[in-house]
Image 1 (cartoon, rainbow, N blue to C red):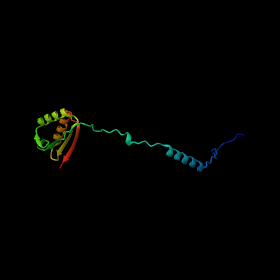
Image 2 (cartoon, helix red, strand yellow):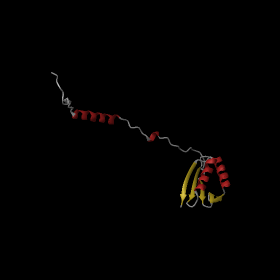
Image 3 (cartoon, rainbow, N blue to C red):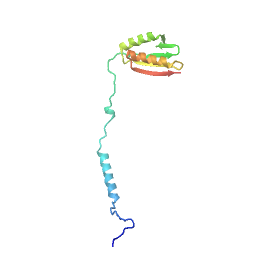
Image 4 (cartoon, one colour):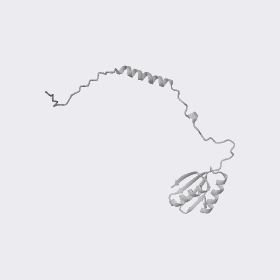
Length: 135
């Protein structure tokens, strides 16, 4: 006679692994204490690269101030044309290309005039630029 299997076959798996947690926590705590006590903290501030000024450089050149107004441009408080502004920037860039330039933009001026002033600075080689909006 053949045996028929009409129902699902049940497999019973039992896990008999019961790990005590107290020794595991003790070992982890001891490792933590070991690494905390043996680590050598590095002094990050002592290894920072800083651009320090060189001694004996003479007097610093004052910051160039370009004003962008709705009526045109002014350099160091004196109204100038675009061609005169470019010529002055070219002369100042010939002295020192690291010269700081502050572009003060009036709230009523157009964006095109600001972009033209920044383009003139880039064209003459001046790259240390700051832009400020005056209200």
